[in-house]
Amino acid sequence: MTARRVLLATRSEGKLRELHVILAGQGFELLDPRMLGIPETEAEDNLEVFDTFEENAVAKARYFFEQSGGLPTFGDDSGLSVDVLGGEPGIFSKRWSGRSDLSGAALDQANNAKLVARLDEARHAHPSGFTDAARYVCVAAFKDSSGELVQRAEVEGRVLHEPRGKGGFGYDPYFDAPDLGGTFAEASLERTARESHRSRAFRALIVALRAQGRL
Image (tube, rainbow, N blue to C red; front, top):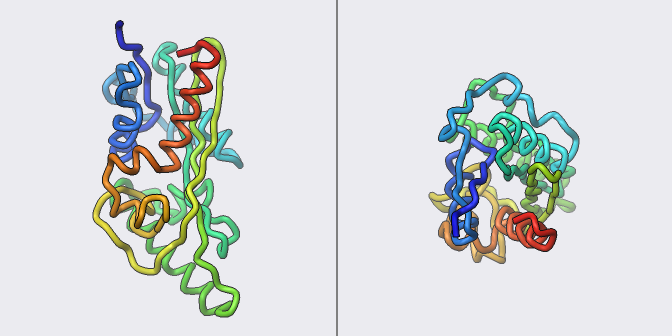
C-alpha cells in the first residue's frame, strides 16, 4: 500500500522529532514546510492570534493546507497552563517572554526564565496558598478537502523551580508529570511519544479520522 502524503504544519525541530515518532507506523509519508519549499512569511508568523488552542491549531492546519496546494495537513497548538498563574502562559506559551528576536533554544530559555520569575513572585505573595499544579495541553487539528477536525488532550503534573533533564524542548525541563515518571526533558522520545499531551491528542485525532473514513 502506498503511504499517504501528509504535511506537518510546524517548523519546530523538537515538535517534528516527536511527531515523527508519534505517527510512525501509521501509513504516512510525513512532510514538513521546509521539505516542500514553503517560504516563511509574515502571515505564518501571525497565525496564533486566537483565544483558544483549538482556533490556533485549525489556523495552522488551514494555512499550510492552502500553501501546499491541498495536501492533507496536521497542525497543533499546545502549551503549559499553571494554576497559580491563572492558567498562564496558556496559548501564549511559545511567545510568553515577548522576545520576538529569539527562536529555538534561546527563546525556550527566555520563556523558562519568565516562568521561574513568575513562580517566585507567586510563592512570595501567597506562601500559604501556593500550588505548583499545572498541565500540558495540546489540540491536534487536521485539514483536508473534506473539512477540519480537532482533538484535545492534557497531561497533569507540576512545575518545578529548577530544571531536570536535557531532552525535550519548550518548558519540558520544568514540567514534572507522574505519567512519565519525571520531567518531559528526562523522558525518552519514545516514552513522550506514548504518554505526552501531543501524543494523546494526535492518536485520538487519527482514531476519529479513521472512524470517518478520512484516513
